[in-house]
Length: 323
Image 1 (cartoon, rainbow, N blue to C red):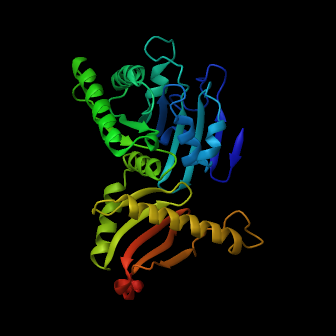
Image 2 (cartoon, rainbow, N blue to C red):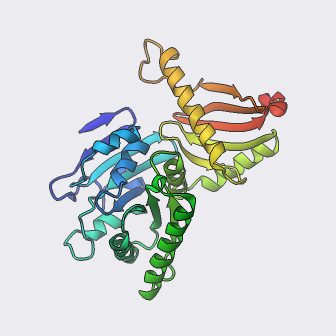
Image 3 (cartoon, rainbow, N blue to C red):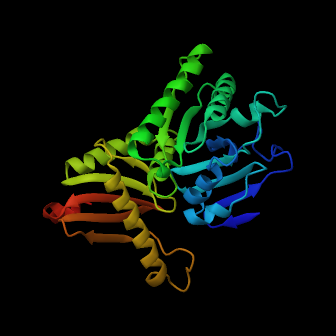
């Protein structure tokens, strides 16, 4: 077992699917939404799991072995980040195997299917459609997310063409099966930039019941304070659980992520008290960074591992008291 202050991860038994408190009739853990990571072998799903939720360096993932058992992790970083991740071995065939699909998909909130964009994805598409069909029949409320992964090795034209091709072929196959009502969301991702964090942010947001309220509060904030963009971040994973209604551009998101890294690193060196060595980020944490172009980044903690990160012009920062 591997355990730290942010949650717990562990391997299941040999077949990967023994009941361990997740079955029907159990309380507590069952109340958390479940996100299932699936894909072909070597598609990169375990690397995504490690980089986003266990802070592994992308370069370290080169040495990961293929997943041969189901791996589960509790994510309980903050008040809005309460769910479970299941990393499913790529060799399992849900169409022909004797696996209890009801146990896998019954309480599933989101199914993330990872496709390697640098490989021939014909078999991956077949498995995607078969898995989605099976999961939908068991649980029609599942959110289906497709990560077109490892796109760092493709140029912009190839990225768009690959996404268009996968989108069209997957939806055509579902339509041929009479499942036009299934909605698939597609994301271009890589562990070597912030795209994987943004994609997972959009997945997690769909599992947060309070999302409309949070978005409305952020809209009210920016309309009364001169803030250009506001994010509510889970500090540990750099997933944003909510943002205002203005479009998210990658550069702004990357700036906020980099700011979080700076705050955590500096706090870890200078902000740790002797009686609280494990928690450099606390309710008093805040930071202000002024960029050369007149942009101000402002961070303030609002709950355990939950921080408001704002982007605004220096001219508007005289309203700091409203934050």
